Structure formats: C-alpha cells, structure tokens
Length: 254
Image 1 (cartoon, rainbow, N blue to C red):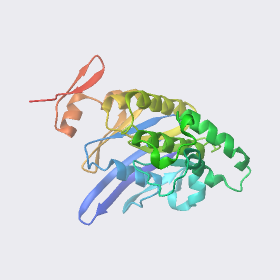
Image 2 (image 1 turned 180 degrees about the horizontal axis):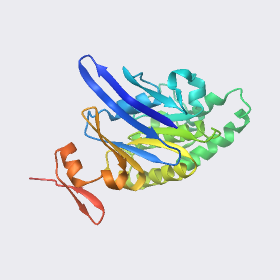
Image 3 (image 1 turned 60 degrees about the vertical axis):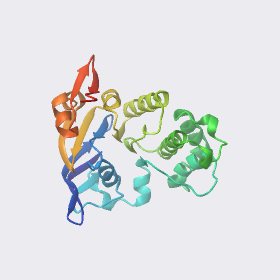
C-alpha cells in the first residue's frame, strides 16, 4: 500500500536517513527498531508524508504522496506520534472526535458518534470519555491518541495504513499487551501497520516484518524470526543478546 524507495534525509551535512527502502503491505505489521538516534521517527514521518525526502520517493497505492491532497491522505492513513500537547481542556471524547474531521461533510459523517464510541472501546479508554485530556497520565494520553487514529480510519476504504511511533512507551504491561493485540487484529482487517518499538520481545509478538535502522541506514529488513537474531542485534546495539525459550535477553552487566 505504501512504499518508500531509496529515501534520504539530511540535516546539514548529517545524514538522518540514507538509501532506506521498505514497503507496508495490507495485512502485515512492520516494526522499526534500532538504537536511539537511528532515524526511526524520521522514517515514520517520511512515510506519513510529514517530511519530504531529499532523495527517493514515497508512494501510496502507486501514486507519489505529493499527488494526494492532505484530506484524501487523511482518509487512508492515520498517525500516532510520541507526544501530543493540547492547550485546551478538551474531553477525551472530543479529542477522539478530532479523528473524524477528514469525514466532515461526507456521506460518512453520520457515522461520527458511532465511530468515536467504537474507537474508545477498542483502545480501552471508554471509561475516560468525560475526563479532560490534560488530567490524564502519559499512558492514558497515548491510548486516547490511538483511539483518535482508530476513529479517523473507522470508515476508511481498505486497505488503510496506521503509523505509530513508540505507542507502548508510556504503557504498563497490561495495556501494552492489549495495544499489540489490537494491532494484530487490525492487520487481519487489512490494515497496513508501521510501528516504531524499542522492546524487541514486543516486536517478536506483533511484527510480521522488521526493519532495523542504525545511524540512518537500513541494515536489515525481513521476516521477524530471520531478523531478530542475537548476532545482528549485538552488532547494532553494541550489547550481547541471547535467546531464552524464545525470549530475547540483553546481556546486562559486565
């Protein structure tokens, strides 16, 4: 559905991304991993159309992103970033309702209220609907942003794309597991999903394909089991890894 080909991004003389290519396919979850500063969030922003690469191109359904209007693109893909600041005391239901803006004035607008309720339930934040957004914890805000993205894509034609930047970073174990299970269900519903993650065991659970970035370069991209190998991870992260009954464990300590 979305393809990035030979992407390059520079900041002055520094390459943030260099010759990166990957594809998002309906029905699959692609996880992006790598050390801090590897270019993971930059890649997600390029794929989302928020950053224009200096080299290469990104296309959606075979058309360059530049050929899509922002409104048309918003009806096919949604983005969940790491931090969203709201200056106004909007309720959670109102924040989730922002996801319906691309459908205003369309034949799908009557679905707005039902879409918001369904998204609140799917993200596990229905009980927070009346709370004001600034009073929420970091983890609660992240789940609300996931709900907002789900409301945005509620009536989107399939396939649709969902892009998430470290969505489990502020979540406890229970809610992390619930979100990852939700991503798997969405993939079965013909979503193409790109998710930036740090926890490699979360990656092993949720991802069909893994892209490993290091210093802006794509050092591996392929099936999860083939990519998450201790030798490759040690080379990228600079720390040893071992597999214990299918769980990847870094070699903490000396």
